[in-house]
Length: 197
Image (tube, rainbow, N blue to C red; front, side, top):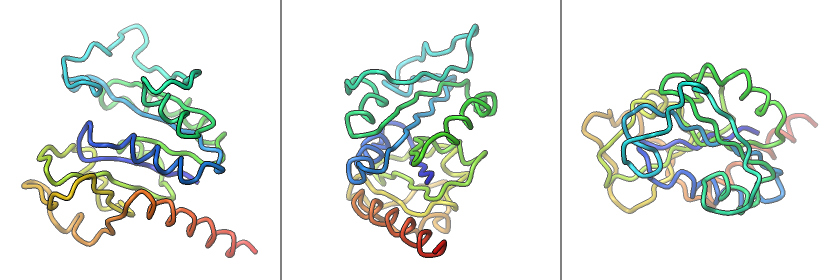
């Protein structure tokens, strides 16, 4: 199963949602992938000017080897993931990482990817979009794929609504907690098992 966890802005809780899904379904042998596209002028970690660009190795894929929650991929492992990868590409350059990334996707039993942009290349079994109505920023990558979301996962009680995002893209989407997302994934697997019997 391929689960994509996206979000409408940075630092909104995407990693927390992914970790919650992993913890709720620990026996699913998760492979996790965090995709960071640098070059937006600010770092995805702290909002400061971003030093991530490496002209020698513009695309980098590394596997987390430790189990320390100082990195998002480390948090995935602490939550129960079997493997965790961090993919870094220049903004708009995810296509250059896809040959290597597809090998990881093909080799995992169940996979969670933290990204919106991956939807340009794959159709996940479930796409959850983390949202917070209190935050006005709305990434173009999220707006592009919002109509494909299976559910919204709110991280605050703020009413949803963004000036430049048509309500038709999100108004009728189910709003689920992390536990409800895990239950929905179990139901997808159960339905698939029943279909193949």
